[in-house]
Length: 109
Image (cartoon, rainbow, N blue to C red; front, side):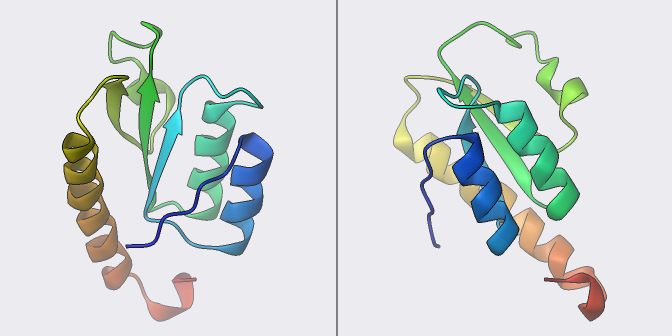
């Protein structure tokens, strides 16, 4: 598993332009830019990729993030156990890998 850390929306967009990601973990309240813009761009560039949102706010705590962001697969409050995040990344990453394997070769990349 490879991990890429960026500092905000512009770094994330740059990374998504040059690499393929299975899972994106982002704070819902980025200091620079918008996590929803990152998720939207990821959905455009890499439709199979999934987003795990982490936050210390109650915004979207009603689960509506899944209605607003079609590639959202999890929503975690800050303070979660690192093992829980690792398990989510492993689980959803495996789903993405299977979906990519089923794509025709010209659609991958």
